[in-house]
Length: 312
Image (cartoon, rainbow, N blue to C red):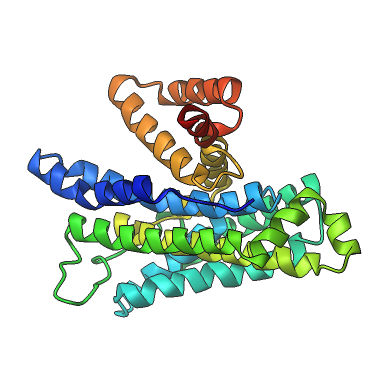
């Protein structure tokens, strides 16, 4: 299916996102600039998992280990003095891609529940490796002395500057992901999701195509991890825990698996709902559970599918 975005709504959305920190600063709500940055980063990470689940049919419970790989790579580089974002973020993406390649070579030889369990096993192994390494801070993780610099005279400590840097990167990556899904590789990946046996029978290299998709998703998640390290100025082993992968899966389901904006809408809805419920009740998890239940019952195609129905 060819993915199309209507120009006018897309431009209005991008313009709104660009001026958001200016508006929030004007109304004296700088905290929400940080929250908006977090939403953008998780929108990218959830979209990378949506590439696997929704478009590739690969249900992974180990996506968090790619986030952790990127986050720790960026943190170690900043602490070592290589504190240029245009170096640390690509390095984080490469770390996520390399780890995804190593895991994918093994995991993609399995199917169904076995694939789910083996990705979970690899992620937990990565988690315990990080916890056991004193050089990575063990349970305490690592603290960054400052955010990575951008150059051009920009202040790396400014939340607004960081937001705009993240926005540019996320928009570029989402554009690239759209191009990928409309390209022959993306079409083949979706066809394999629908019937891998038939695709293999007509001569497509199923394993290599799935591995390519797995590595691309790992790279995007690693990049998201590198940006998270800068946002929080701290990384911890919790980034690699299986519960983080579970949260990402909830985002994909909430937004709509197999919908281009599913990861974006799911990340925004979940993080904003968490913020809202934490302000009004101590039972945040209960409120999130009710929201997820309502979406599953009344909008099985997710928020992206519901939006499409309303638009029609």
